[in-house]
Length: 365
Image (cartoon, rainbow, N blue to C red; front, top):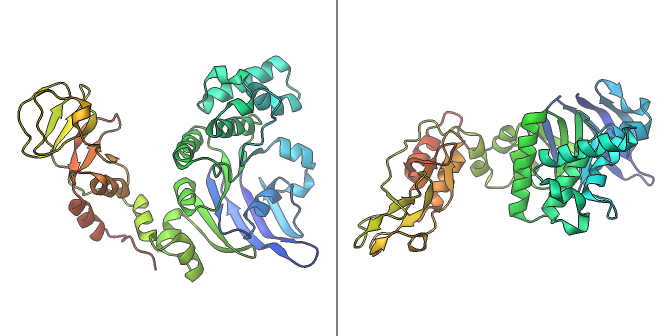
């Protein structure tokens, strides 16, 4: 179900303009991210879709129909909506929170609660959390409940207004991964608001950069926005390191994966090592590095090892390969397969050679 803004404008009494003549098409089954500084009209644009904000001029179409032709309450009931801090009802259990929309739609209580339990599982929460109250959950868990409640409408459209901005970076990354996993399964049409360009390029099939005053500055794929910003404002907003971010969209094809010397945990190591060895467990998964000149007399334990930096999953974009090589204490980026088993290693020089010779390049303007 696609969404289209046609000259959508929101002007408030006194003359201030929140959104100025927005023309933008959100394609069916994709994630479109609205990003920009404070005061650029991101949230106002989002709320025009479910009529929480009415445009002063122009039109917003949902599946080709003007949203003003729908009753606001019925429209909102059929559109998933996730906000910062989840917006859960504090005196209702988690299960009751998620069951709210099906109950409003006329489902009987048993069916609504069964659906709520299914949705908790879909967003990665254990069933026993359904009996708890929002205050008994972590921030990340509350946001997952918020997503589950939005999915309860079973609508093809999901609106998300800075849903992950109130949690710490590690939890935030996990929630982003969860959203991408859900989208791969459900294929919703998602409009996502954020002020964070890294979040925008990680999640979006398309990214709309808005400038202060509510005007659309650029709309395109994350790669296009990073590598070809249309003007100085967009270039400044996406940052001077946009070329590095752009590596997230370049293939690692051509990066040579070399053999890496390994040693298995629990094996007997006598005397000092003469070079860096990658320690692996019995399943062939990396556990850390044994530095040169380290003396180990007896079975090798994890306490003997140095932390190994990030891992590069074979077949993913080249940025991961460079990160792995640069973060490794051995200057060898560990390459693993999809199951997490060691395949080999890469050096930063090997990765940079591929980047420098890549036909698409990595720099912006």
